Length: 254
Length: 265
Image (cartoon, rainbow over all chains, first blue to last red; front, side, top):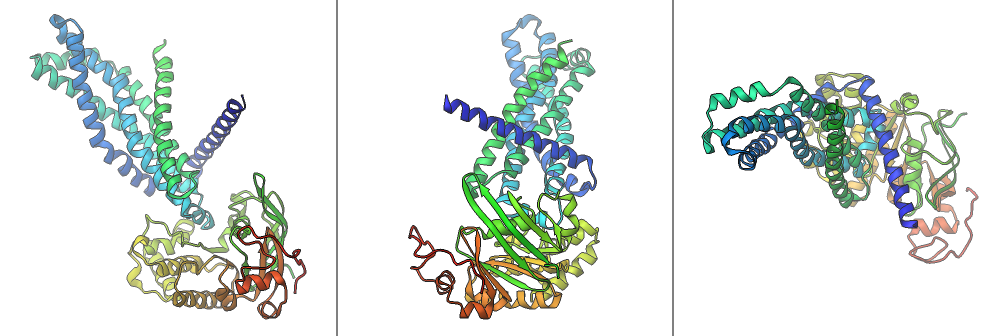
């Protein structure tokens, strides 16, 4: 009983501290000055350098999805089903979610390690004594950059994922390329794509916040930074999946 | 006359551990005060409380007569502007070259342009006897002594009225220790700044202190001038400055032989 109570108290304390951290971050995003040059640097690091990971992940996912649908469905009418379900699955779910999880592994860990190292080497204290708000200088630019980059990465994942399905469909199953493309275009609606992009923006916010939060409160030297990095990836991944469920319920319930 | 820095009955605990137990200390304008004390005596917590990085549980910390405890970060911006700080390990920003580290405050807060910021960095580096060839180097490529000196250059670049030094000579060889001590002394005299240094290096104390305070178990148990330090017969002070393993100060589980003498010399 005492263990459960202690766990609940610790969980409540963490949730409260995270809420305050998110509040401080939102306030620092809205208040000037805004460090545009740091946001630009972070867009390159978070967005541009994540492109290969996201592209490869979505290409193979699109291909695997096409194979599963082909063999799992009616093979005699598969040309229509494969193109439409690949497009739907990738744009609504797999593009943003798998892209988000891959970026969480790459970016959230990197942010937590960088800010965590700054914490344990007193660089964050140094920022404060140099009259610079660490939230504005370190956290806000990363959160803005990740929130802006993730929808773009999801759009890239959508296109490449659908292309992966197209390659498998036309090369392995002998589908007609023109018909495959036409059916994909006819089936997809703008809402399918935008719902995925909205999800991706939320995932970007989660990825950056969890990386910054865990790094900001890391302690205990190198071991503490390692723990912060692990916690950042695990918590970001779980929150992405939970947020995906919630947003899917909200966006597609009506 | 109002003290430049005044601590009155400052308490700070972490959980059940009392770290500061009623610290009282005044630093006059232009004075160089060194706070000595063993590891875990509360020196860093006291310094971080003055800098606003930690909030004391109770007590008062005034800078230029203005209360700073529980002052919002935005509210103490003008106080922070007159403060420079040299951290124990330099705390230089890894992601920035040396010149951006040194001129950081001017670039971020005053919007100084690149050319002027580089000139400012050259001047500050010159004051700590470093050349302009370091400007574009990364902090990771500097030696320990250079790290400290670049940190000192950053601390004095904005010409602050108050400078704090956190164990400025820790981890340095005796020659570099002497160099850093003299640089601190010279820079401070040139700027006319008020300084507070925390250290357990007695060489630094003798080189840079106008006044010394001994912190033990979260309290200032002795304070006085450097001359008084040498002449004092305070058993705590004698044990500390002579590095004796036996005496009233608890060392590695040893017990007190005498009660703290709270009287100042």
